Length: 341
Image 1 (tube, rainbow, N blue to C red):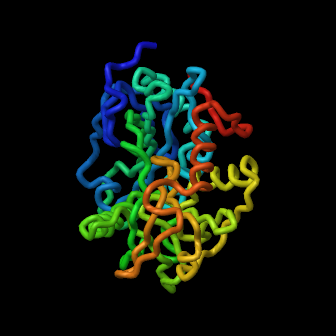
Image 2 (cartoon, helix red, strand yellow):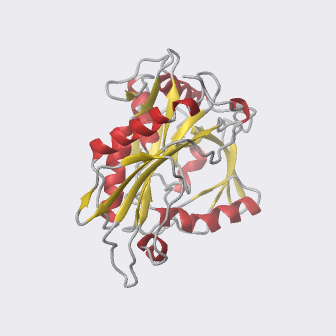
């Protein structure tokens, strides 16, 4: 298929309207058959549940062109499951997981001309989401919902090379101990906007959120999980009931153990031990791993031994191995890659 005339090398991480998207509506207790549409606009009532009480959740994943020219997605079954968990927590009907996968396939295939070519560093970002559509004035769940999937080509997260980030310990709390931090609800991201803008205004790239109950344990950033490497090359990720179960993080832990032969564990991480780690990274769909070089706690600097020039050696191996699996030049575990075209 002939690709769109896009300057792939200079794409940013921003919305580019594509040809088709998928829409399915929930009414009278059931989802309709769903369909592809060329209409990018959403028309809802002024009193819709999503507008009044933020009843919405979403997912994020990518489609890639592999080394052998196929278009694939990476572990979309986990996105399907996580979206269903998010919906149930917000009292919304879960979209059937097999239909989720079929919808992703349809939208990516219909927009194959927008999937960046192999080697460009760009990918096709996929955004599935659910939201309440009917009028709701009392505080209660909506009765009608819409599930949509759109895609947009995005550029490489690291333009001009990978440079470690400087992050700060946030004065804000990301999620309540028994709240919604473990699901991908739009409301979690709305409350993080002030915190991230405050961090940026103070010269930092991101926030480190601590647990809201004791403020002694590392949780996550506004949109990514933490990954640490000890001085004896053990991979450690924080464990908490109020952080998002990152698909990238789970994949990196598997890669660390099964591909690189490293010891890896998910456990509570006290902030006091951060100074003793050799490497630190933020892991998520957008960048896979963003290295962290410095953490600032109200003026007190923690400088990671890996430094501010490049990824640490273990973080780099993890990054290269996982992206190699995604791009098709390293053999993937069974079920990780879903071929679309």
